[in-house]
Amino acid sequence: MLVSSYPQITQITQKNLRNLRNLRNLWMKFLSRGWIIMSNGKKALSRRQFMRLGALGAIAWTAAACGVQPAGTAPLGTITPAQATKILRNENAKGFYIRYFQPFPAVDANVWRLNVAGLVAEPRSFNLADLLAFPQTTMEGRLKCVECWSARVTWGGFTYPALADLVSPRPEARFLRFECADGYWETVSIDEMKNPRALFVTSMNGQPLSDEHGAPLRTLMLWKYGYKSAKAITSISFNAEGGDGYWSSEGAYTIAGDIEPGFDHPLDLDDKTHRINGGEITEY
Image (cartoon, rainbow, N blue to C red; front, side):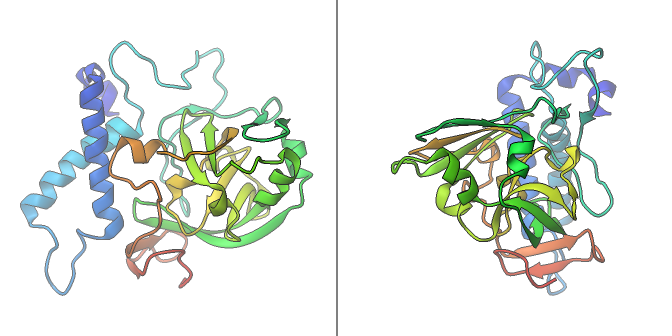
């Protein structure tokens, strides 16, 4: 692992860490839009440009994705060995990659609570059994990541109205802010969560949602990149104003997170390069 092989990396200052994350984000933006892929017999980047960007991207990926922190601080979610049960890390698992912005201990669903507050008439705290008692629905859809891969899954869970009916949002509420167990956060509009292709997810392919994919609760918006779909959610706040999510505040990713025209590698199919038009991927 890069951090253990090169201890000096742990001496990164806050400013340099942000620069590394920005480089990583720029690299992933090139990947997601297919700018390094051969087109009409020509390279989108020169060999020198590709190698230079690739080296920077590799360093930045390791620093940002592995949760490298400035000297003197500990990553969010750090626990002692005695407390450790299962630490979730990024993994290129067959058929569907696992992605979190930093390692963290898996949520214990037996004690987990979802706290819902903000601009609501009836703030509530739910356990997993409460959520599974909501009216459940399923939808099939392909989740697209900015890293230029995707996977199609049958998702199960409940829709926004099921939650709203119980907490009674106030008229001035326009946005939802999700806080997650790994320290991640994301903001989406209520109108977006009302979209018929959006879901609060509690299951995948007929099985309870796994720790690796965001248990006990994650969101899904199939026309947006995966970073807009918060995982391992611990709280939801109804707010009048929106704002940045984690990745849109840290680098080149947009606040909207809408899938743009470019290229895709479906992990559940042939993993070949497919051109996409933008928006939800429905062609395959």
